[in-house]
Each structure stands twice: as C-alpha cells, then as structure tokens.
Amino acid sequence: MTYVVTSPCVGTKDKSCVDVCPVDCIHDGGEQMLIDPVECIDCGACEPVCPVDAIFAEQEVPAGERGAIEAARAFFDDGGTP
Amino acid sequence: MTGAARVLVVGAGPAGLYAATALAAAEVEVDVAERLPTPFGLVRYGVAPDHPKIKSVAGVLSRPFSSPGVRFLGNVEVGVDLTPADLARHYDAVVYATGAPVGRMAGIEGEDLPGSAPAGDFVSWYSGHPDAPDLSPLLASRRVAVIGAGNVALDVVRLLVKDPASLAGTDLPDHVLAALRASAVTDVHLVARRGPAQVRFTPAELRELGELPGVDVLVAAEDVAGALAEAADGSRADRANVDILCEWARRAPGGRDRRVWLRFRRRPVRLLGPDRVSGLVVRGEREELLPVQGVLHAVGYGAVPLPGLPFDRDSGTVPHVAGRVVDPERGVLPGVYVAGWLKRGATGVIGTNKADAGETAASLLADLPGLRRAPDRDPGSVTALLSRRGVPVVTWEGWRRIEREEERLGARQGRAVAKLADLPAMLALATRPGGPRG
Image 1 (cartoon, rainbow over the protein chains, first blue to last red):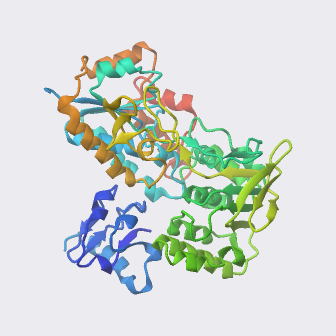
Image 2 (image 1 turned 90 degrees about the vertical axis):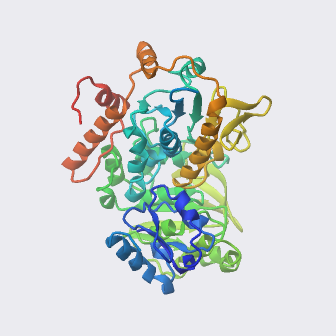
C-alpha cells in the first residue's frame, strides 16, 4: 500500500508532511503535495501532522477521493515533474 | 574549534541513525556504538516481518555510513566496553539513543507465571533478537490472550494466527518459521481496557487483521455499542477504527480454523495458575474467565536508566530540553544529548524519529563552539582501546557480511533474506579476518 494526499491539500500545501517523512518521498506536485507510492514505506508519520487531514492510507481514502491514488501513481510514473 | 568535531552516538536504531545523518551532514565525525553486531534497532527487531515496506527504511538509515567520517562500532556496549572516562577522552559530545527496550506488564496477579510474558519478548523472539528469551513454548497453547490496544498488540495477534505459509517469504529466522508451522494456537483473545473509540490502532493495520485468510475476527455487538457516538468527537483514526469494528460486529463468523476475539472495555484482573497460566480473568460488566494457556502483555515499552544520566521514573525518559540532557540538580550536562524513545517515551512511528533526532542534532551543533574539546581526537585510538580490551568490533563492512550471509540463506529458500539470530555465529561472520569483501 501507500499513503495518499487528497484534495484538501489543494490551496493549502502546508508541507508539514515533508519535514516528517523519513524517506523524503513527499514532493510538490503543483496544485498539491504528492506521495511517491513506490518510495513510501507506509510508516504513517505524515498522516497526523497534516493540518487539513488530507492524508490517508490507501485503503482508507474516502470514496470521492479515490482518483488521488491513481493520480499520484501517474505523476511519479511520468518522472515526477508538475 | 578547529578540525572536525567528534561525536559518539549510542544506539544504532532509527533515532541514533537519524542523529548520525544530521551530524554527518554538518561535517561532524560520528562513531555509532551499538551493543549488537547489527544496526537498525526496532526496524530489524520490532517491525513485523510481514511489513517489509516499512523495513525498507533501512536503506535511508544506512546512508551516513557512506561518509568517510562515520563509523559503525557494532558489538560495543557503552558503559561496559567504553567507560565514561573513555567517552570524555575521545568525544566532544555523546548522543544517547538507546530506546526503551523493556516490555511492560499489565501489573496483575499471577503475571509472573510461566506462559505470561511481555509482548515485546515475543516480538524480539520472532524477529531473531540474539538476547530474546525462547518464546516458542507459547505456541503449544491452543488459546492465547493478548492484553493491549495498540499496534504491537495487533502485530502479535496477527503473527499468532496468520497462516505460516504466508510468512514463508519473509525474513523470519528458520527456527521461528518452524515453530510457527508447528503452532497449536487456534484462538487469540485481544483484551483491551479501552473502548473501541479509544484504541490506539492504526486503522490500516486493524483492517489488515480482518483480511487474513483462514481467520475469523469476532467482535461482540455489545462491545461496540455507543462507540460511534463516542468516536464522533475523536480523531479521524478513532472514527475509522470504530467503523471497522462495527462492520466486523455485523459480520457472521465464517467457520474458519483460527479465530481472533476482540474484547473491549475489559480490565484484566488476574492470571490463574497454579504452575503455569491456565486462564485469565477479565472484568467488563461482569467477571469472565478466558481459558487461555498463554498471555502476552502489549501495554507499552519502558526505558532503563543509564549510568551517569538523570532519569525520570514517572515518564520513563531522560529529562532534556530540545535534546540537551538536564540534571534536576546540576542543570544542563554539557555535551550530553538524548534522542528517540529515551528522550520522548515509547510513542510515535519510525518517521517521528527524523524530526526528534534532528532537533537533538541542531542543539548539539549550536552548542559545539562552547563545548570542551576531547583531548584524544584520533579515531584509531578508540578502536585500539577496544582491541586491547578484547572487544571484537563489528564494522559496517562486518555487518554487511552478516547481511550477505542472510541473503545467501534466503536465496536458497526462495526468499530475499533469512535472518540469523545466533550471536556467536554472527560475530564470527562479522569479525573473521580476511573474509569475503565487497
């Protein structure tokens, strides 16, 4: 699995998650932050520090936000530039 | 100060290695002393074997050792092999990151009976920790209780009921895999004092328990009554946990071979003997007897006081300000720092240690210009001293030899790694002169 940043991050991009990620796998994806699903180690450090509750474990992503999982995957498959 | 500062980090777990990373980035020379011949602390000896992605953080934690100024001094116990006088002679500062190695017990009558142990001992055993007591006799029990409401409780419950065939590809030591294949355990009772809205599970890890093939997870409707309302004021994780548990409470049992019974709002009262565990009495609305032959206590970890360091027994931590050790009577101890669980208590995830150790390293770096300079600054004199004392030091290359042997053993069985757990064998591999390199 992986952790996933969802839409509340858009317009917020607080980036507290970047500071706590132990493997530096959270990157600026333009509109919002994005977690590299290959590099993410599932530790969950980012989830509680997000001030807008945008980060979910993959299985816990709400129904209306599931598109964020594929979006992150596509972004990093593409080389990871906005 | 001229020339690079010299710092000793005590403990090669995540906190120690993140501290070493931050110090090395500031061009400090770092020695990392580790009691065991192996690095990574709880990443190697705590993270569950079926969570390999979390274990991959070891790659990041290894990075400081590619700097020429950073050394691994494995099999070196500070306080035994190196004295306080040695530290003062060779290092400008010391960062203690020895963690919280002692598994706590629930504190109930009968808990010293054979068959009752800290969950941490079971974790150490299945992880192949060289000092772990042999917990394989627990697996002769048909029914086991696990006391606790956090992720360690979930890990041990899962390992107790999971189909051993699905663990065959993990890094579990051979003797542990064999013991799990021969396990008699059919029923595991998780006993939580807390209600479903107050448990400390990570929801993703709770959900994992309900998806194990061949395992029924049973939650009584009465145990989750009212929990939805309670969780409404709680965190998102609280609500997710309650949702999962309510869903399970509605599920019909599937007649599978192994069962997990999740019991909430139940206080463990006493273990029954006489010669070994024959039952656990718990109290909810009424008293009940769980007919278990084994009990694991997953109620947290504690640190142990270190010689020469102040220790707060209530919190189980070393008093500090931003990582600087503070003695209640003498004030800040110059050049002495803490990081990780010894600093903040046994909470948080691996990633928490990055910021925690970063804070400590920043304090140390800010203090450096004012610190007393160690008189003997030759890195070689530390290793020469250990050699004179007959301490076989495991270098990073020595650890890599252990790692390569574990990979070789694993490859023979079609898995990436099969862990070694025998200390003399590991030391022989790691310190043998002229062994294969690369």
